[in-house]
Length: 216
Length: 332
Image (cartoon, rainbow over all chains, first blue to last red; front, side, top):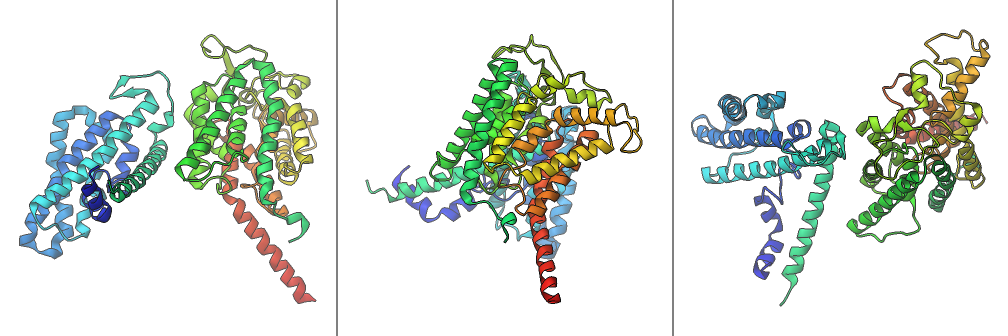
């Protein structure tokens, strides 16, 4: 790492973390957002892909549209706007997802419509909205990528441990942890993933500080 | 605090784990006698996994690895002995990972865990691989070290009891462990000898173990499960009740649990009265889960439930004792 970059990160670590929504400030690991669909339905790579597509389509709409409407309805209408847009946006999103994934989409069950009331999607109703569209879009993409990363990691790990498969392809006949396909196993693995992630963050912080102190 | 209620010294825990490992060795030798070298390799895999987890966690937490603290190895060995000799190596490794990581390290390591790590590991293993955990090879079968596809596996003696029947095992075979079951928990005579040694070294908590066994025995005596038949009053059909008592206590890992699991110094209650209540409740809960549970995991789940109440039992007993003492002083 270049010494200037290391010094900048070391001095502004909290700000850097706040801006990075994929690794250093992941919405699942550090804010516990989107846990319910993750623990219950994220049991395979295919389910992870479907949930990721749903969040990818839903999140930018729920972030951007209320911001545009706020100019007409005022600050007090913010919760209504965010929740209403989430509920309305779900209808076309569902049809798009159904067009792409066909009947496989039904395997997500109630957890797909429940995204509408998932804090990951509608948490902005609690805060004042962002300053501009570009910032909002950037944040929502960061959130989606961060959530997607955890979705894929957890989904693939669970599929491998429970079924010995990766994206439906049989990799091994050994079933290392069949419990991984249940919510209980999902919780355990998510906890372990969060622990490893936090450990990685601590090591990264130490590494950056060491690099910043380097004189040569 | 009087002598009976004294909390063990801090180093007593460390010695406990070494003593339990020592006492597991004769049990392991018996399982090698019954099934060949496979139990030895399984136990070795378990102990190595436990040790590696200990070292890994010491490294991750920036702590010094303590080579004299053997709790992980002890839990791994006891857990391995509770599994069938036919269980795959990866199942043992994953069970030990669950035992040490989820049962112990998640709560802060040795001395901090509220639930017995072996019970946690065993419960997770049973939930993971019920088909592997409840089917056993015949004793006196030389098991191959790797490929077990040709080895016939049968239900354990407990399955016959669950189905309302009786396993046909002679008394001598029951004592020696010559019947289908987990590789280490069937040889009752050896386990009792180990229990005696642990008791002499003050590692076995006789109060909770005896109250646990007594509660199990009374429960079986009052409610024997044979073909769903009611046996009337407790003093009727004594022969049948004795037979049921023999099978339920010996063929169900009850004695193994009483010797190797109940006396764990971190999770058991500290005062004498609470240990009696703990043992009795554990015995009743174990038998209830054995009678009505879906699988033969009675002791593990009962232990987890009772561990959750263990500190509360201590506090409740101490509070009652303090109140009684205050009343006595007032009356003076």
